[in-house]
Image 1: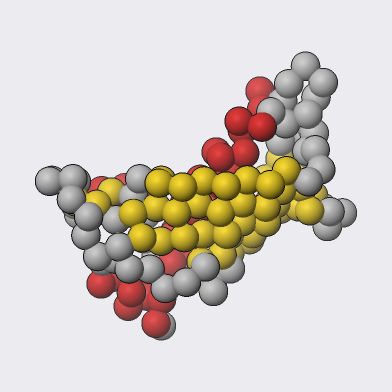
Image 2: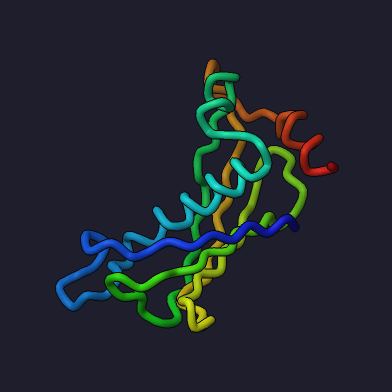
Length: 132
């Protein structure tokens, strides 16, 4: 559902001594993916937080297939798995520009009120944009 793709380059600080992207850098890549997915939908984290909505990650799963290396151009596709309710799940595919799959992942986040820290339903402004 609603895939969003963007390209970026591996920075030196994301690699280990062997020039390979450190496994801990991948969650930040996926965060970029969902941030850009939301922005493409017309919503930003900043705007949601200013309107009482937080999205903490409650689950992260990564499957590493091939190494990414310093200065590689990577293509990340972020896709909504299903219509959100109290939670929202994204699937990711990270490829190099040769179309080799480097990693696949998924994250699940929950909608919480910034005021009282309780679970809330997906905001109407997201549901409305998903229907459009």
